Length: 507
Image 1: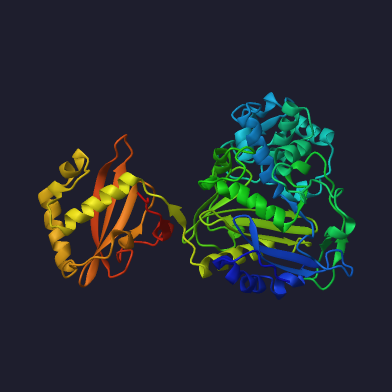
Image 2: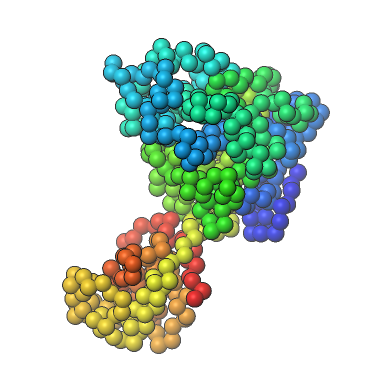
């Protein structure tokens, strides 16, 4: 089944992409699954498969799946909302809120702060397998674990390790400062204000016929065994939630829109706080199996979210969810707001692989930019003025907007001689150049701009970088020879910044 949410380049490719990723391999290992492509909070296409309860009922767009550790993004956003209100200090030792926490590293007591716990660099080791079967443990049981003492697998603040236990301490801190169950605080802080009516921490609000049941397979999908829902107790705040593809589409755009000029629902959580969530705090080595062989320049954990830096498409934000009987994944492209959600009701479903392949295919087929950059008016004005000076044959000594050091570092005579040699190399500059906007190549950020000057045999690529003082000045000007229509020289390595979309000011 396919649903079309609107007219866009993403919609045009969604159906083919979803058909390719929800392949025989994916369908074989889960009784039911769903994958949706979204754009800025709107579902553009969705494919469903199978029978979510192992009976005659069919998976629909509204089928509710368990999203497991995707819940951590909701916890992180709630923690930041309370921090913004002055109720939580993430730099303080967690013992200020949960006094009976004992942590040791190599025999010595260790201090764990909220920030270290939230960014998965507290030193607490990876604990997924243990936590999965303890999700329903009581608050008293988990409190006893911390009171008896936990051993750190690394020095605090030094290493990425995914700790569910550590992040659950933030849930306890939320309860201490609000006097309420953390699930209720998440609901009232985020779920209700954002209209996520199909998202909850427990199965109770849903009709039985709307819920996907959990299943396990030990023979590659030949047979399935029903897997009862793991309970939701003291650790529920880090992994107990249920939701639908439409609600997660809204959630992804709520977070992703923080990077736009029109962020969704700023009264719910400040855009700056949402950007913090999507900023890598703890580096994760790449390549790594957890990134499914993607070509990444870097990766890290933010607050409740993983952040990838794709060499071609730039920033991708994501998080998986896995519990016995379920596999879930959400991911979105920061520059375009394009995202993918994948759910399956078997832990063999590999939702991360399915969603990752889908988003990659959509970005490739729509030739998505790696970022959208709006250069300063001063950047564009300086670039156009220097472009005109070069085309008029003026000496570098006459270039406008230069900081004083530019001609001290490389004298005008040297610059003029180098430019003359480069002009000869390209066979001379063409007398008639396209408009400046058509010659812009890229901009790494708002203070930089690259453009080309057309030559007879090749092109000149010019770059200016400004310094952000009150009246910005050009702090560097560089010129290199590139092939006609090329972005890079033969010696330069491709980078995501080569594919930034540059939006010039209109005045």
